[in-house]
Structures are given as C-alpha cells and as structure tokens.
Image 1 (cartoon, rainbow, N blue to C red):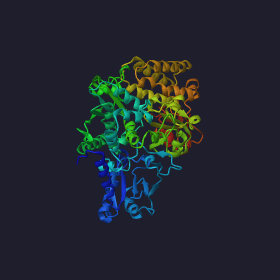
Image 2: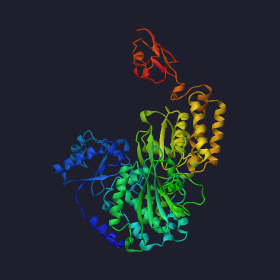
Image 3: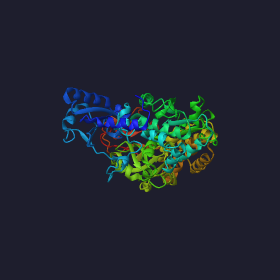
Length: 612
C-alpha cells in the first residue's frame, strides 16, 4: 500500500487504532541485551503458553530495549488502557505464573520492576518521575519490524506535515528555534547546520546519519536503531527536504547486526508505503536511504573521517573549514547528524519548538540519553531532561554503587571525557556545565567508578584506547598520546617522578591545543581531570611508590600475617612457587618471585594474607 497524502496517512492511522483486539500485550524486550541474557527462550515460553489457550487474552509483541539492561530478560504486560506491569530477571519457568497473575495479581517468585519514565508528548503525570522519553519514545513499546506499530504513534506524520504545509527554510527554522543541539558530543545547533547546507547552490546534497557508536560502554544509538528505526528514517527525510537533498546514507558499524537487520526491513517497508523513494506523499520530493558499513574505527565517528570512509578512503579527519555542510561527501554539501539527534526531530515538528523547550534547561532544551555502566547496580539506558543532576541519575535511576562501595567518580563523554567527583554530584547536566568542570557531554556514555578504582590506571586505560583508535594523521595525537600513555605506565609501575607529573600536564595541554580533530583535542581530558581531582593518588604512586586502591600490580606487596596456621593451601596454589614454609608454621612470600596475582589471598581461609 502506498500513501500519497497526509490525510490518507491520518485516516490509515485512525483505522489501525480503531481495531481493538481487547487483549493485553506482552512486550518482550528483544534488543541485543535482552537476547544476550536469554530473552529468546523467554519469548518462546510466552508463545508456547499463548498456544495453550491464552491467545484470546494475550498477544506477544517483540520490542527493542526497554532500558532495563540490569534485569534482562524483561517483559511488560500492558492493556489497552495503558495499565502495565514490568517484570525483570524473567525465566521461562516463571511465564505461566506471570500470565496467570495478569495485571491485577502477583506472580510468586517473579521480580516486578517499577517504571521510571513518562512521555512528554502524551502529557502523562510526571510527578516524582525522573525520566522523560522523547528520543526513546517508541523504543521498548513498539515492534520495530512492523511499520504499522510506528504509524500508530503518529509515525511519518511529521514528514507529511513538512511536505504539505511547510517551506524548507521553515523546517530548519523550527529545529533552530527548538534549540536542538547535536547529541553526538559537540552540541552544535542542528538547525544552524541544516541552514548552512540549505544555503548552498541547488544540486547534489547528502543527508548522513552517524551510527558509528564507538565509545566504550555506550549503546544509546544501537538501542534506538534496534527499537525504533523508522524515527531515524523519517527524520532524515525531513532534514533532506529542508536542505534540498535526495540521498541519505546511514553509516553504521558492522558490529551491530541486529540494528542493521531491522534498518534494512524498515527501509524496505518505508519504500513500499511511499515514505522513501520517488514522489513522497504525492509531491515532487524524492529521497532514498542506503546503508554503509564501518569497520569499527573510533575515529570514523568524526564527521570528516566518516565521510572519507564512505568514499572508500582511509578514515582520517581533515582541517575545517570547509565544513561538510559546505563541502562534504564527494565535495558536495552534506549534513551529518547522529542517531539520537535524528530521534528528536519528528517529535519537534509535530509538537513545536516551544513544546521541546519546555523540557530541559534554557540553554540545553530537551532530554539526553545516557548509557549507565560500570560499578553501578542498575546498568542500562536512561533518558532524562537536561539539567538533571548526576546524583539523581547515579543514585536515583542507577540504584547506587555495587556492593555498597563508596562512589569515587563518574566518567562522562566517553574516552575523551573527564572524571567527575563527589563534589560535583549535584551538578546539573548540560553542555556548558559539564565543560566547566573539566568533562563533556559526549554521546552519552556514563561509566561509574567506586573506591576500588585507581584513577591513574583509569586515565591510562582511556589513553590506551585513544592510542589504538588514533588514525595517526597528526603528530600531537599519534606521538603525543603515546607519550602520555608511556608516562602513565611508568607511574603505575612505580617509575614515575614529580617531574613526570609536570610533563603530563604540559603535554596534555599541548595536545589539546594542536591536535587536528576532536579525538586528539579531547583525548587528554581523562589525564587532566584526574590530575585535578585525584592529585594525591598520583603523588602516592610517585612519592610513596604505592597504589592507594591496590590496583597497580607493580606497586602491590602481599605479606603473610600472624593469622597463618601453616596449612600450606597458599603455597599449593601459588603459580610461581613464591610461598614457602613448614606445615603448622607461618609461611613467607618471596617478593622476587611473587607476580602479585592474588591467588594466595583468594585461597586463604584464615585472612592471613594482606595486600598493601
């Protein structure tokens, strides 16, 4: 079926919504995280129960990630009035009890999970609820492989609106008025980027989606593409109309097979219904989208490196200007936005700039999606209004620190971000505030660390990643970051000096000022932020040759205390034979042979081995 007018689309949606099954939906979280946790077996169990006679009461719906990654497999029961019950850590054996209990009962042995989000578009009661879902508005509640599910939630109506009622320049202005800033990290105004491209002479132009999500611990874009691919396709078409482009490209890493599969199905469905291709909505506007696969190079998240990769060249950034909006893919005007940025566009067009600005802060309107990872109880995806504090995210939505350990720091902005400490936990999250305390928004990775993390080693870990992912084009990044890594390695091995600490800061600032692209310019952030906030740890490594967190193995020392009864268990398990002693006598550790593996401490039943 091909839809050629906005009126026909609205009529089609009305007919879809008027068909009432009277059934309670069983939403099965089948994104990558859900499948990895065993969600497919749970889904099979649900379908088997429905086949036994419950198909008249329930219908099974495959959805993307609900964001509750810490308690996958997850399912949600929801009836047509909106009442729901969410269950986490679900096993196939629990399904009969859950379905028997329904929405009004309690399934013995099953774990109920409280919903922590509301939908600003639907003006739900938001009292006491921290999350507001705009970018993730459909993720986790529609079947991403059925375009009709997307159409039930006003899908493609924003595209119909702009093609039928708005001039191209009015579209860019609406996005600019909404103050939608790029969610990929830099926070550049999206509408302004569109205006730059639109102002170029008519001719070939391109609309690109950057789905090359490479930050360690980040999975925001993957969740959107797996759970709501049409929101990105619709937004790209809207942007293409605004700038005068007829071709779109989604640059996605090949490591996202499920997202690729669902995108391919979504593109096919959109073409069949006339939302992509020739004469969209019966107008003269033509636009189509293809996929290009990346090989996992982190630097290709930078827009000029990404463009070179699409062109078949080495993924290296170039000097700007000219910016891609002026001269990009094949030297034609090109707009590059990331997945989350696009995921906000259709909602803004439908509801208006003023509505979008009613959420968030005056300088950073809207919401931001974060991937919570690290030493935190509730790992997963959250979407919060800009201005929400780190404390609310980590201890409210994240459930606090694992094993009741003390909070030490949170790394925002991925490997190029900074470490934020306890003193800044009440910092409201927005672009300017994070920058002012030595970090950055980035794409939305948020890695939480506890008191057992060594901050020198953390900085070293991120520098190692940056060194591996540097394209090597510019000297500051290629050589400078390698030298930073070597200095951090020396410090972790007890070979650093006070002069090393001075050189660390000096070189970090030089790299920030002279590197070619954003990767190199921000790569020293973990070093500088940990130097600023945890200088005493650096001093302990350098002056005392001691790692306060007990992480840097070269600085560790295992000794046997007076609790030793001479059982010999430690000696039997030592891989290097470093422990000796007579039975029923206190043993000793030969420090020259000890490799600091910690096996002796793990095996000892009498707490007789100390780690210093």
